[in-house]
Amino acid sequence: MKVKRIIALALALVMCFAFAACNNNEDPQTDDPGATNAEEGQTEANLSFANEGTLMIGGIGPLTGDNAQYGNAVKLGAELAVAEINAAGGINGYEVEFRMEDDIGQDEKAVTAYNNLKDWGMQMLMGTVTSTPCKAVSTETEADNMFLLTPSGSSVDCIEPDTAFRVCFSDPNQGLGAADYISANSLATKIGIIYNSSDTYSTGIKDKFVEEAPAKGLEIVGEEAFTNDSATDFNAQLTNLRDAGAELLFLPIYYTPASLIMTQAKAMGYTPLYFGSDGMDGILGMENIDTELVEGVMYLTPFIESSTDEATVKFVESFKAAYPDQTQYMNQFAADAYDAMFIIKAAAEKAGVTADMEVAAIGDAMKVAMTEITIDGVTGTGITWDASGEPTKQPRVAKIVGGEITAA
Image 1 (cartoon, helix red, strand yellow):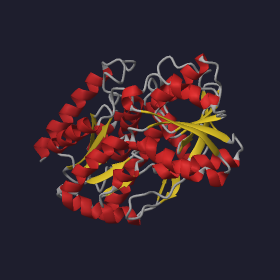
Image 2 (cartoon, one colour; image 1 turned 180 degrees about the vertical axis):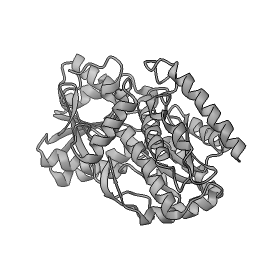
Image 3 (cartoon, helix red, strand yellow; image 1 turned 90 degrees about the vertical axis):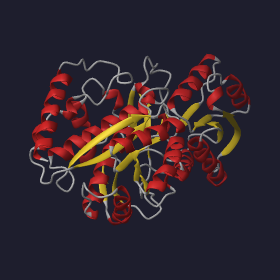
Image 4 (cartoon, helix red, strand yellow; image 1 turned 135 degrees about the vertical axis):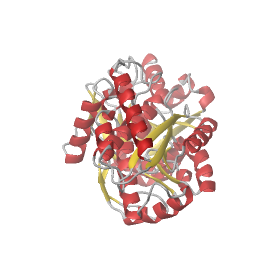
């Protein structure tokens, strides 16, 4: 084992020199966004681990494709946490190794990624990032009794297995939270909805919003659907909602189609208010985004960069120091993943997880420990879980003002 450790240390040193020669301004969607300052200093920390062996944690998410803003943010947030965990001696004295695979936001690719990570030696999964792939992968983890903690998969059926938990709030909670906020702040009474009928994330939020709207005094004047195959032209939907008198458009969708909707609405002279779900986070990080186009957009989020609480301030400072050229990824998805790694650490230490445990045994231990811990993180304080896997936390509302994300 000692010879293995020396070889691993030598390889780590070689990798550090290789990273130093890289240009940090390279596109993180085509190059490894984890080859950054967050990994510096881990080699020295490795010398202080109390136990031989490594805990292998995998991640799955879209590192390329339309939703790459989410996956790269999760990857960087997770790697930042792992660097800090390893610098402090790891988990139960074991070094943590993290590897993330690209699923392009597709369920088939996510299952392939899961199998690749199993071949690598994954013992626990921090993922997947988006809901539909997470549902597909959770079926696989259930068969293996693999512990799964998704940072941002919010669909209810993402965490059906006993060993599956989530960091973010669920789709129904987002639908309820959006209806509550719009009503309580009198943003509008006539609401139009554009949603992705082929996406469980989008339909789950939409259904709960529609259910809650009447009791909140909100009139739904139109529900307009699109699918993944038709997410380019929204003129018909926008025309229908404009003619129906929609003062506010509720968009429980991801940022890429949302940006197209706003662009096409502006072109036709339609200027409603926009309120989105957490999938809207990342829109400011899009290449060449028109900040005037998204001025005043509001969306649900567990993380607002300008917050002054201690956990947020520390995370923001650490992220900027580690990734000075990739701050476009400092969003709620990075914060969810950062918290996810420390949640795994807390539960694994509560459960007494060791590096030589079988995957199924870790799953059994972790599902109990998750219901016994309380976490104060970047995305919430006093967070607990019950056996359903749902966290006790509530969304906040962000608003884009002057090209910056502020608390609404």
